Amino acid sequence: GLAVEQEEAARGGGAPAAAGLARPLGTNAVDFSVQNVRGPSKTFPKHETRHISDHKNVARCAKFSPDGKYFATGSGDTSIKFFEVSKIKQTMLGDSKESSGRPVVRTFYDHVQPINDLDFHPISPILISGAKDNTIKFFDFSKTAARKAFRVIQGYS
Image (cartoon, rainbow, N blue to C red; front, side, top):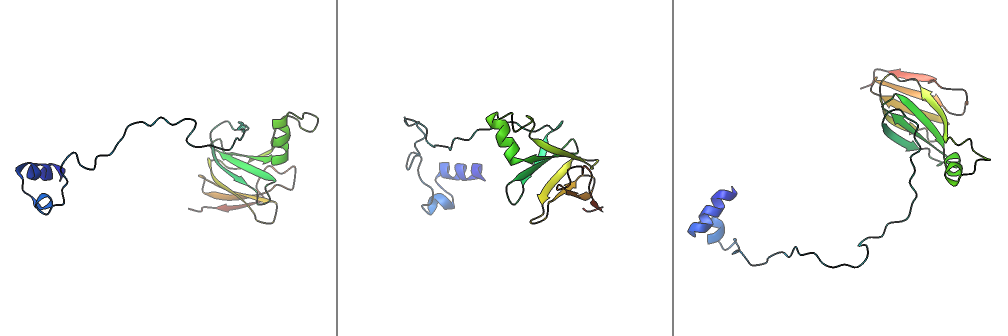
């Protein structure tokens, strides 16, 4: 290890030092001094960030729909919040005429354990979720009254 190499180098022996592979201390030193740089070293695009989740526990996953019109979040509270992007924009702009002030379109309650992952069907208005309860559930978000899955696959792992 390092201690053996240091002892051999101190005695003047050992393969690395004898082969000329070890450099004497003080050569090729690295300068770690702080440079006086004016302004930020990186510029980042300016985006506004807002907290919009109504979950009662941490959001564990989120996914946008393929067309970008919707997104959903899955939580440790076992619920799935379904958002419409246009309503979020209205809420952020403060346009209260068009919006009720709540960006959540609907909440799906059908899992009994925290949500692990979400995905949208590439064509149909279907949201798919997987949870720690070992189920995969399919929600039809085109039906405004739907709060439960229309199809369940039990016991995946």
